[in-house]
Image (cartoon, rainbow, N blue to C red; front, side, top):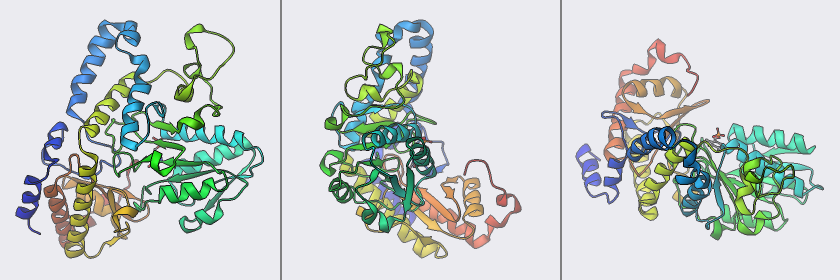
Length: 406
Ligand SMILES: *Cc1c(COP(=O)(O)O)cnc(C)c1O
C-alpha cells in the first residue's frame, strides 16, 4: 500500500465529504476521536448563538423559547437512533459515571435478596469504582471476574451485571445479545456501558434485548470536552425504576414546587438537577453530524481503516503487538498495540503531529473515526511511527516524563 493508493481510497470514499464538517487543524493527524471527538464546525455557530443571543439577549426566556428544558429528551431521542432504541428510551444527563450509579442503585433496590454486583476485572476504572460504591451503599459485594468467566458467574443472587460493550483498552467487544439472553435466564439485569460503542459500531439495543445502558457524549458522538452522557432504559422497565438520586428535574411536576417527590413518567425520572444547556447544545451538533452519515457505510469504512492500519503496522512497525481482536464482530473502532515503550513512543508521535493515546501499562491506542479519519491519515501515521522507531526519536529524555492526562 502506497500513499497514492491511500489517496485513491479517499477519493472513492462515499463518506469523504463528512470530514469537511469538522474543524480539524491542518497538518494534524487525529487518531484520538475515541477519547475526545473532533469539533463539528456547526458547533461554533450554535455555541455563538446560544451564548450571545439565547443566553445574552433572551436570558431566562430561552428555557421556553429555545426549548432548553426539552433538550435532554430531544437529544436523547436522536441518540436513540444511533444506538437502535425507540423514542423516549434515551435521555441525556450527567456523566457516564453518575448514570452508572443511578442505574445500579435503582436496580439493586429492586433485588433485595441479591448479594453482589457483578462486573469484569480490568473494566474501565470508573465502572469498577462506581460499582464498588453502589455495592457498599446497598450493603452487598462487588464481584469482579475475568472476561472469560463472566457468563458462568451470573447467578440468582447477582443484583446486576455491569459490562462495557467495547473494552476501552483492548477494543474487544462482547456479544451483547448472547450475554443479555444468558442473564435474562436468571432475571439478572445487565447494564451495558456503550462509551466505546455508540457511534463506533452498529448497535441495535432493541434487537439485542438490552434493557439498560449508559454511554459517553464526548467520544465518538463528538459532543465536546466533558459533554453530558446518556442513559437508556427499555420502555417496559422504566415504570419500575426508582432512582435513589431523586432531584427536582426528575420530578413529575418540577414547577409545582412541592415537598413530595413523584418520579416523572418515562425517562424524565433519570434527570436530577438543572441540565448544562451549553454543553447539551454542543453535543447535539455532534449527534446531528453522526446521524447525517449512513451507519452501514461508517462501519464498513471503520473496518477498512482497521485492516489498512493493522496491515501497515505488521509490515512497517513489527515491534508492536496487536491486542485488538481482528474479527470485526468482536471489536470496536480503535486498534491497540502493545509495546514496552508505548509511553515515550506516543509522546514522540504527538510531537510529530500524530495524535493517538497511551493506556497504562503498555498500550498505544489509535482511534478510527470514519466520519473524519482518512485513509491518508492512517498511511501517514504509520509512516511517521516507522520513522520514529527507525531513528529512535522516542528515546529523548523529555518523552519519559508522564503528563497528568495520557
Ligand atoms: C470514557 C468512559 C467513561 C467516562 O466516564 P465519565 O463519567 O464521562 O468520566 C466511562 N466508562 C467507560 C467504559 C469509558 O470508556
